[in-house]
Length: 264
Image (cartoon, one colour):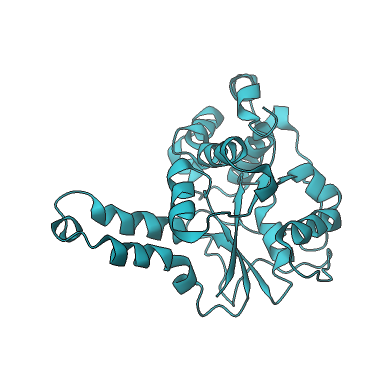
């Protein structure tokens, strides 16, 4: 049996470099954006409508499939500890966890100021024209609106993080701020090991490898070139002039207290 933990985090907040560091430990696998939540949702959807399940509602057998999704997905992974990254805190996904996976799940939350996240996305899309973001509009406001709509990459994670902070036992959550992580990555990693109660491992914070798990790498032709490329020499925050990347209207619209869900 694998030990399963969860990571819910804002995009452009150090997820990939954090996972790359954790994956130096041969006993840990911190995943990419996980497909497991989608598998659970798609299987569960078979209950809806005039389906074979409703024609013969064998709940015990059906639930057995859902309970074993994660263990079966990671069955052949060589690591003992899996940190599954996804929107695990949204109300439907968190219910899946409690109902089928773990009654007391431990969840790591990685957060960053939303304006910094938006600036990082715009900077990335400016440098890499063939990205998913550029297909949604030509202006910065249009691109940011795509990220900030109800199903946008940022808002989905904000909903996930807020729900975890408001509706779960604080002892089962570890909140990590991006700026703290880049300033002192060793301290952050030590906190994660203590939180997960995993035996410590000596990590390196220089000459980091690009993210991969079990020899599988991101295919950034899907979302856009260099979306998951990290700085390998050392961990540091990229210096950006936010006011040059984001117009005042964007900053005014989304630099609001309501979006700082981890401080409310």
